[in-house]
Image (cartoon, rainbow, N blue to C red; front, side, top):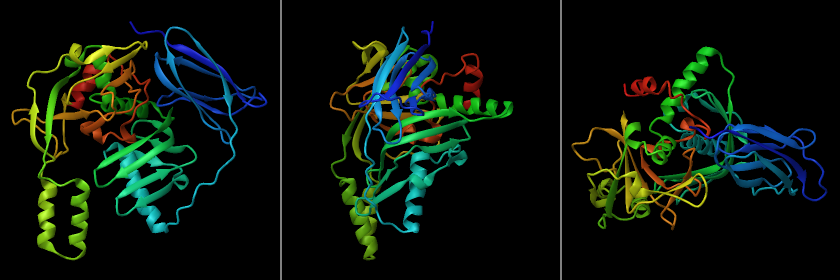
Length: 392
């Protein structure tokens, strides 16, 4: 039985003189729960699913108010004091129109994605973006002072994104982006909404959100997942990625094809000299634990975790993802920790609450074009039909 939805109410005022703040953005990050404060500073968020959320209040001229809240069995009432802030002008990075356009095209590809959904995504206010590109490190940074608004006409959402971080590391092929985002339903006719529902379900099944929800419900096998312990050993004969990239650039520039090809061969080598995939699937009881926080679960494992989703085929080749010869081309993701605690904490919505691990493989492709709000729930009556369609 599902837990009952709850209501969040409150009032927003200035912290110094307690005057009300109207038209402030109030939302639960990564969800579709959002509103604006009324003339008297009050707000209401209705029908909020249980789980842990990042509660955000944002208004021009004030510091963002951010609080972690746990929605459970009782309504929540919040009194918010916003702190006024002086508007500080950012340092200006001088770039040409050609530089900005090139950086924007890279940002769009790596922020939104390159899948079929991405073709139907449009950034509505690209002019608010500022870019910094470090040529020698091949690092692109992006920032914005306002909501970046993206219309995803593949999934039927308008996504309002407050960017905290965007960093694209072209040497190590790592893209990190984060921030607060609010999902709003796009208007559409009956046929469009039906198409959006199919696309949303397709994005959901096999996703990280689907996996974590299946994990805490102990329904991995039923939902099509398997997880295996995975051990890898670094290839000591392969130079670090930054050394390889630096030499490729160098020998390309001075036109030394023999030396260049030598470094190309080194770049093509696997990062790992030896890999062990344990054949027996890991049991949920071996890796999942309850925590002292209600509704929060701890997922921990040694080495790496190898996640297989058997109801979809992978269509991208990943050089450094090991695949047994006898395994069909299932979608596969490798999880490794990037925090010192070696634990992933997540809630009942299937959302990580302590910083994401490193994803390699299928989930590493997930971008804004595939993102769903945390309150998204596929219709269980449509599940088998959608899943059979996805397999085609």
